[in-house]
Length: 417
Ligand SMILES: Cc1cc2nc3c(=O)[nH]c(=O)nc-3n(C[C@H](O)[C@H](O)[C@H](O)COP(=O)(O)OP(=O)(O)OC[C@H]3O[C@@H](n4cnc5c(N)ncnc54)[C@H](O)[C@@H]3O)c2cc1C
Image (tube, rainbow, N blue to C red; front, side, top):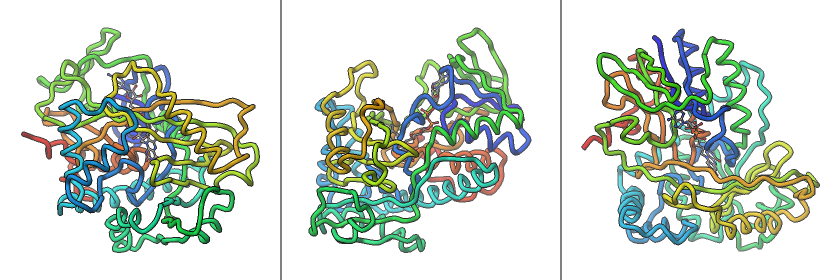
């Protein structure tokens, strides 16, 4: 088939690579001048099979109101309380303790495991050198915090994925340089999670895809996608091009004037920050990833750099200035938790990235409802983890093959009506 993919982030590239591997003729259209410049640029790099990243599926126990309050607490700026945002937050926090919420979490973990398996296979087949380290620690205040992860942990146990609940002393043994921990602290250690450099992976996958014949058109914004006698797209360069299938991998939904969907996708954009700095003294740095439950800040070691990610700005205007208070907090947390690890003299990088969330925390992967037009977007907190799984599942659906995991819960059509 002749296939167009819109968007060259990690998801678009993984999809292009998957489909070209099946013998399709694939072209990728990207509005930026290079691949992986948007959400895939400087994320926390956590490849996690547990769905316990900050803001991932709202799998918290408690009644709806408690979960709503918890969801709003994780937001870092004061402008979230418009009626539209409140409506979205109500639906998002409602997913938590229902049977459907549990199924969504289980499905997220299943997809994450598939993603990790496929990503590993690609890396080892291509002998790609991707910066990585093993294990994720989630630092908790105590038992009450632990309760919030109970469902995710029960599901991990049921699928025989290893994890351990540690006390303060054991935690210190695993991350000896971590400061500010006392014996009252608890932590969850998930050894099967890991840190991997997302952008590095995306660029390596892009190179391989190009060898397979995938064409990349950069600086080419798609201005309209239509589905008349067959799907076609119009680019900002004035080209009108027809394809057998078009797959939208833009993370955020395309506006109605670009793609007129007949679906009412309940999506919201949440922006977060990442600050990166070189490592001065490796012994003072984390060994892998440490997530602080209370602040929602993750600190990861990505190759020779440290990265702290955090903050959550709900539907903030795209041209709004950076939140300096949050950026300061990220640097302070880095210094307090791992003093002496950062090499500020070598320069720092501050980045704000946008993620799109559905109310049930699962991505939107499958038919758009328009003939020949498919969606692979809204991966929320863990699009890096899910990228290769979404690519595989989309390609299986498109080819009419049985899917590796059931796709009803991620289908765009679940939001029909
Ligand atoms: C701070 C932060 C930390 C994160 N940490 C993690 C983590 O630890 N683990 C994890 O699994 N995930 C994490 N994520 C999420 C993950 O980074 C994203 O889900 C993932 O990168 C999404 O990839 P994508 O390819 O769908 O989107 P993107 O990388 O955003 O790519 C979409 C592309 O589409 C292009 N595009 C859009 N519109 C058009 C158009 N009209 N025409 C042409 N091109 C277009 C854009 O320019 C962009 O390049 C994090 C995200 C952030 C922001």
